[in-house]
Image (cartoon, rainbow, N blue to C red; front, side, top):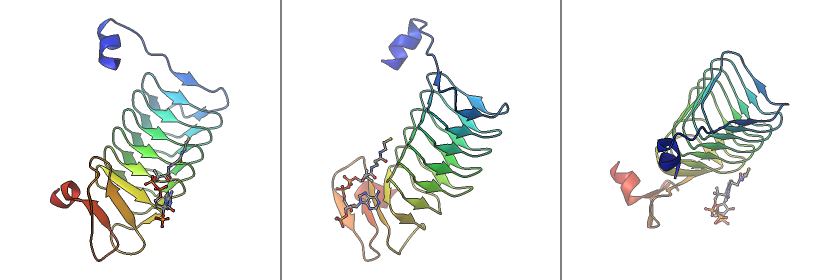
Length: 159
Ligand SMILES: CC(C)(COP(=O)(O)OP(=O)(O)OC[C@H]1O[C@@H](n2cnc3c(N)ncnc32)[C@H](O)[C@@H]1OP(=O)(O)O)[C@@H](O)C(=O)NCCC(=O)NCCS
């Protein structure tokens, strides 16, 4: 649908609440929604068709990919790169410098300390391996569990 509308020259407007704070050095694409009291800090880049929901914080030098949704109250620390089509749940915290792969889902309240492979579902504390981590691929339903309590689909295991 987006491609069709773009082809006929439709200009997608941005909807940005007047209480949101967007740095002058931030770059915001088209078709973006930025909710009440959200913050987009210096040099951050928010790509097209992204939602930065109520009270979410996008810190300096972050890159938020296309069609990504950063939910209510989530904190994305500096220099984080969230690729396209990702979802960050309410009140999740993504620490500085982390990369979140495309099509990933970060559960509400999760704390992400290390990079997240594309297509992952992370719930709770993500330290990149072991511990009390639950991760699963959202592209396929068949899950496989290994001894570390890490759940990956056969596709992720292969990748
Ligand atoms: C992460 C999420 C997508 C998981 O959905 P799901 O896989 O269908 O999860 P389920 O509800 O079936 O729960 C499966 C297990 O994961 C746990 N779990 C679910 N969400 C969790 C979360 N955010 N953090 C930690 N554990 C979580 C459940 O407690 C359950 O554990 P159990 O099997 O030991 O009982 C969902 O729970 C979530 O967090 N969604 C985000 C909602 C949100 O932020 N909306 C914002 C709108 S602005």
